[in-house]
Image 1 (cartoon, rainbow, N blue to C red):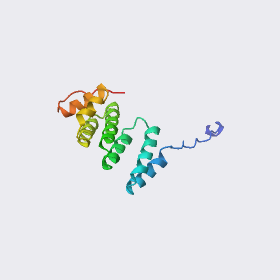
Image 2: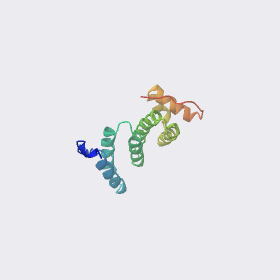
Image 3: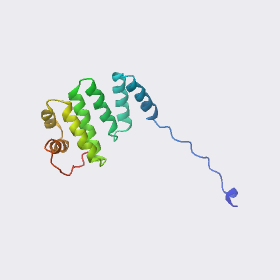
Image 4: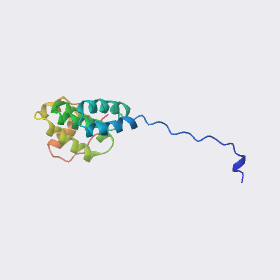
Length: 136
């Protein structure tokens, strides 16, 4: 009844999603197996969503297919840190196993990681059940 007396506010239009176009393009590029373009789009998505673990995860997958194991390992290590920070410890552990499998010299690369991330990899490679630290 009194609704008509209230001033009408315009309905806000939805904010544009800056990741929508790159995500769609990434799907098409991955389907076409255009790895070079996929890496560019993944870098863009990592910039737009720096806390999303899926982008370094996918970048690691693309690099692994390209035979660039060391770069894949580093991308996976970044995803491990992000998964832990998101509280997704099972995914972090699985990603660490994938990273170790991506290279033959994993122990050398693990030694180059920051101590908190290296401890995650040590926990996985040692098959010990430990609480994973939050790594920022």
